[in-house]
Image (cartoon, rainbow, N blue to C red; front, side):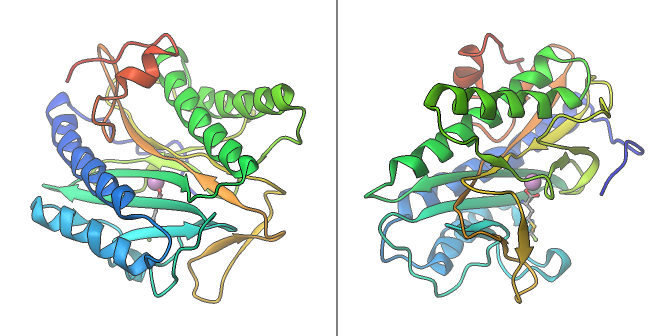
Length: 277
Ligand code: MF3
Ligand code: CO
């Protein structure tokens, strides 16, 4: 959707405002995570997020985006992304992906997580853990790589390693939806694909801010949009997971703006120290 043109490189002061937006998103997602349980509706989760965002003096960025009617996307089971909150009641064993965005003083944060409700199918837990690992490997590649294409390569490596370790079929990587630049708009150039590509992508340099967001499926990546014009589901009905963080590149390294610790713990395990803002 986006080429490599018109990348908005941010100053450290602008990144500091994005950090405020990122922490609001982190707070909203923490509140949603605490509220998720069988019997709860996805609309109730949306209300929880919206309350946290507005109480912080921030604005939900999804609400009204191309007519989108909610503050969260809640995508359950075979829904990959863009599930609209509503009367759906969460069930035991559901795979629930929650995506949230907020704006502070015109600057955006965007993040998502996936959780499996008990009793969890071990294959669903593996899907969710591998997607989270793929996210962090992709983020680490922003620190260790020299081109943006390093992210997709790292995601693919994690998926292949997971399959080799378990002897199972590799999870499918959804290619139709990608990460993106982020700043004064939620979606900006450049695209951040979750797969290896011949296009090595833009040079990784200070000021670049991107949302990394792998989506993995237990089956084939083929998908379609439901009649509500938003909800993206797998064609084969297999379950899907989605994890996302907003990341800033600074002179001193990277910071994960939507992680409370800036990503320090997960990135240290991958040999990457986060920068200070
Ligand atoms: N947050 C999604 C993304 O990660 C986009 C949500 S689309 C919206 O890019 F319409 F729901 F806002
Ligand atoms: Co995003």
